[in-house]
Image (tube, rainbow, N blue to C red; front, side, top):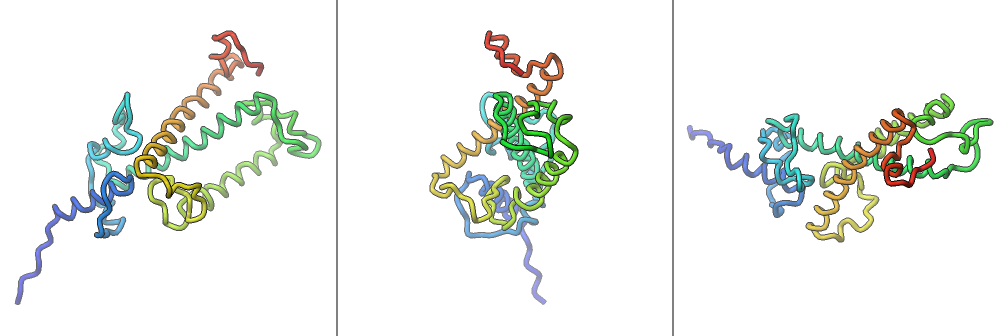
Length: 223
């Protein structure tokens, strides 16, 4: 009987690695398709991620905790998804902190007899918002997490792509270079926001002066 055809693993691994990089727009499209499970099974060393979006000067590839040591593409994309999500949340938190510190509030009441205008800014709001209001906030965030802020249709081109074939804002009109640049900008802004909101909370608890830099520059912000 004829011998079974041998399977050559090295070309297959190279092909899968190329497909993994395709999701970041770093290589040309190839007509060969590989199932995501097969791609994720290929173990990739940390050095394989040194050209990913977000590896930027001056730090370059920065993984002091070794989270990507012996990680595969699936592990990397999971960590990138979490980083993007936290960055987006913190950018909204920074904006909300600035807006409420400026005294801007929604009209009406957050609960019966409790106007929005009476809710302080910063961490103090957690003790001022009624329990029912906090429950509504948690429920709304849970709804977004489970049903909205995810790749529902499976059309996402990269981690964090939640367009779902509906919201585009002209993304497909950008060049590949512009897409990579904009994704890098979002990552950097999210990273800065994560540090920023942490600093605001820490300084609020230390001396009730979250905008300490403004105070140091001679323009304190009433809080």
